[in-house]
Image 1 (cartoon, helix red, strand yellow):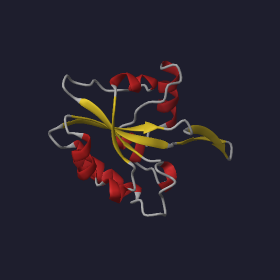
Image 2: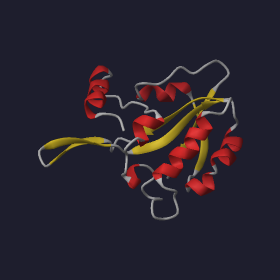
Image 3: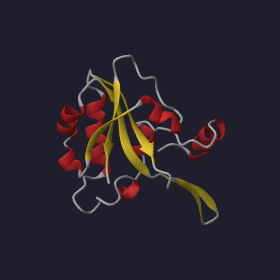
Image 4: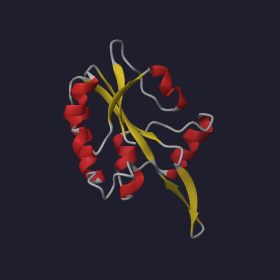
Length: 147
């Protein structure tokens, strides 16, 4: 999981815009099962480790440039027993690809993910985030969304 001081520095340098996190930055050491798709956790959604494993396989595909976790505004830094802690709240998964949304829905198995599907987003919609990797020509950004 992204280190607290690194996260703070990113916020400070980017006008408080939340970063798009790599899979490692979101999933490494993250044991909070409700940190993504909390409404589906315990209602059939796979575990964080299963989601991560699937996304790592997707990220290695030739038609995929990058995969990132978009954070929800509920992401916060809290104090716990006098110590600051980062509480991540994942919102969606953003995938830069040439794959069509319907094909990606099958590849990631949206039903298994308890996801509401895959949508196309415009590059300018990512301007609300920091740490957005480049989007090559002829590639689109797709989002795996949960309600």
